Length: 199
Image (cartoon, rainbow, N blue to C red):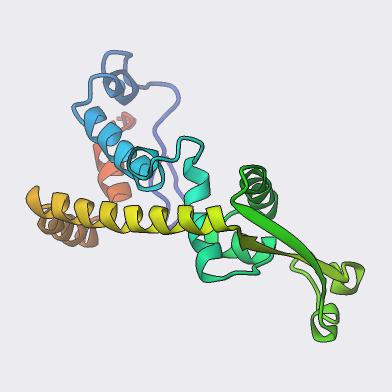
């Protein structure tokens, strides 16, 4: 079987592992599954702070937007989106929901001339959009943002203590060292069944 330079040989379609031997068959039996579930739960808990800030209507997607507006009052949708690493559409929806909860208010202002002379990332001239909506926290929003940021700081501190307790930093360092030697992709290729070669 010929292969292109730099490419690993592909498993033959003529003969593959049986269902019992297939890696797919073993997925449901992996002891790793609880680990993925725990890590996913930890990630979700970073944004879902309702249990510690006493704000039942606070969705996980709101927390970081509140913090951004607390430190950058008057930010436009695109500014908040850039800070969150989210799309303009998703961020606009988030801010609209925060306005409906009375936590955020918006005000349309005329853009300065230097801004109208620019071009948006999609190539649209800013002159076509002479106004921008600036977003500010309301009095209730300021209080909510303060509680959210305080809770997030505490949660990050608790998470750091948890990682120290289970010696996660040492594990992460050993894992990084091992993967620098051979990547997970290389190890996966080595573990894949090899096709039979012609005699």
